[in-house]
Amino acid sequence: MLSHKKSSLLLHSAFAASAVVATVSTAAAQAVVPIRELSPVEAKSIAPIGAILGLRPLSGGRLLINDGLRRQLVVLDGNLTNAMVLVDSVAEGGQSYGPRPSPFIPYLADSTLFVDGTSLSLLVIDPTGKIAHVMSAPKPQDLRFLSGGQSGVDAKGDLVYRGALVINAGRVGGPSQPGGAITPSIAPPDSSPIVRASFDTRQVDTLGAVKTQSGTRGQMAVDGNGKMQLKLTINPLQTVDEWAVLSDGTIAFVRGHDYHVDFIKPDGSKFSTEKLPFDWKRLTDEDKQGLIDSARTATEKSQADAKAAAGAGGRGGAEMAMVAGMAAMGGGGGMGGGGMSIQIHRDGGGGAGGNIAIGGGGPPGGMPNFQMGAPVIEFVPLKDIADYYPAIRQGAARADLDGNLWILPTTSAQAKHGELIYDVVNNKGVLFQRVRLPEGRSIAGFGHNGVVYLMYKDGTVGWMIERTRILNNARATD
Image (cartoon, rainbow, N blue to C red):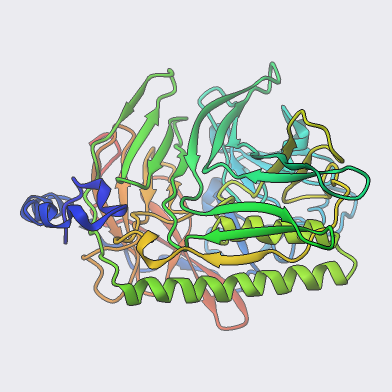
């Protein structure tokens, strides 16, 4: 267990010797953070759920479930039984779920926003579980990028979400294709913006940025047959950031390189925590090679799926190659976390086509007129892979309903049998407790006053939900 005070351990092992000196102080810091257990199960669902994309507590102890597989919004009673379908996949005199999974967005006063991907609008579901009304989004075209990831609203009710990942496409070597088209190069950024959109003014401003990938490079060239070739050099161990909107409207950015949190309070003031204690885990060359082998297998599957989709009449081969390549650059999700949103912008040098927007709902806005071969995938040498596991992965941060930020580190010395242990940080930036989950359980969502909803897979039947609560729970203001 090495000191968290040497954040550069993630990048280079040269600091390892000096970090050992601080091991004792790190152990002391770990020891003062109490570990809370969860109570025995208070209620359990009896009917399986296809896929839990989110849940929201309702009045009377009831629960609203977003089943993305069956494309339904389902209300369970206080015992998590007696399911009632609020929104179905097919409309019968009411609202339809839509053709693809859509997320929940926590809204003001325990109400919920649901993204209607068909009409590009938002359903407002009140705390009793009724659809109160429909409202338009500040930028309706951005709603398709919100599927598959978290979003939120600030204290004023303005929408906060991950903005588009913009990839600049410039020119390489001048006109090189038949007809004088420009062959684009790609300059993938290593971060994505977190933006806020006002429902009143429809204006969008950038609040900050989160790191989405590191160490991965991409370039394009034209082969002898005039086809554009995408070459990717992938680092399978990505250092990323995560973010969440707390229930009081505070926005939190978890920085993966040294494991600290940056906060933006509802009044606009900003502050940062010190580096949080973390059990840095060293990687051997064998570990690094295992990461490369696993990443290669996943990338080959992505390419095969892309090829099959193109052959089945889906997106064109060039577009699917681009999607597979960009997904690989993000480590299978590095561009997600808020719904994958990719825009490719050409520079002023001309060339075919305009912008490309690849997201969670619907076709792109335009496609350059070029032919593309399958991406060529390479991996960085072992020496370029960090010597320590990063502190967090994609999806590591989430907010409860009591003003706290829950963070799942990649490793924890307190885990007994591989169970998940979350670091819980309050809205003052204090890591005030850790919460241990039972083996085989993960978090589906939260209720008020320390209530935690767990989920687990019941074989091939589906997902089940359990309601429990934190024992000896401290409060966010403690």
